[in-house]
Amino acid sequence: MDPQGAVKRRLAVLVGCNYPNTKNELHGCVNDVLAMKETLLTRFGFKQEDMEVLTDEPDSKLKPTGANIKAALRRMVDKAQTGSENVLFFHYSGHGTRIPSVKPARPFKKDEAIVPCDFNLITDVDFRELVNQLPEGTSFTMISDSCHSGGLIDKEKEQIGPFSGVRSPAIETTATTITSRALPYKEVLDHLSSLTGISTSDVGTHLLELFGGDAGLKFRLPAMDLMYLLENMKAREKHVDSGILLSGCQADETSADVVSGGGKAYGAFSNAIQTAEGKRRCLEEQGTSDHG
Image 1 (tube, one colour):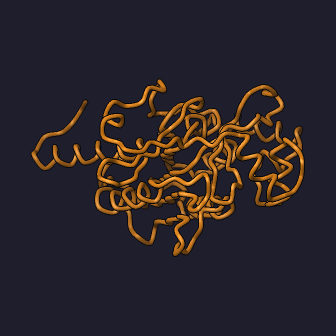
Image 2 (cartoon, rainbow, N blue to C red):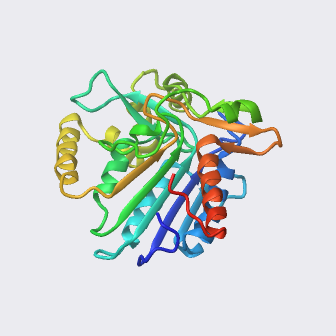
Image 3 (tube, rainbow, N blue to C red):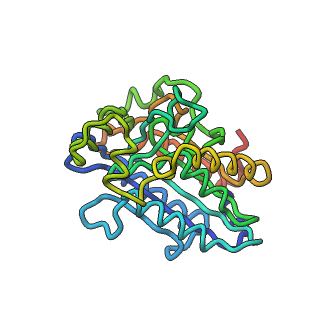
């Protein structure tokens, strides 16, 4: 995404989930979103009216529930004009998780998902379907500062993200609190079980009971229908694939929620992006560029 590039329209959905007053609480996710919003407005030519911001702060007008996030993403895609060079951007900061795969061909594998504030999981298949609906000439960039984010667009290799689980030395020396943005599957299951009162280890059963038609595609479709859908997705992605995933880690790794020595909370990956963008801006002001 180039600053002030020649495109018809720039659209963004920004999501931050801190899960306040819960045992899963994080502290830097809303800060990540606010920092990214400012960057998009001041550096990349986005307009306020073309951005939707969803946070779980008490005064938030639009909470980041699973249904609200998916609806916002659909609105963004619907606004994109066929044949125009549209830029669509999605930033998510919050918990990520891995769930037993419901894909018929992957009975012993894990699938990646983000965890909205109501635990209505959004999975890699949901994001793949979204990318496959993009109009011609439209690009979609997704930044996910969450654990296990490397596989969040099904079949898509993450474009940016660490290739090891080693924590950054800079984080080690400057942070006072480091919290994983991983939510273990058992904790997801325990939370959903407490809401449904159903004793089962099948996450889909809980999600369908709680959210019905708003549950993710993986959980709403019978196995054969899901297989048919995935085959259609696979055939379409051979012809057009405009999705780029920038992830804080690979599918089997975790990301960090950091509170710095100065007391400010942020996501380690989101902060790295802001730091790199700040360096780029300084170099531009000095009349040089960073090609490294």
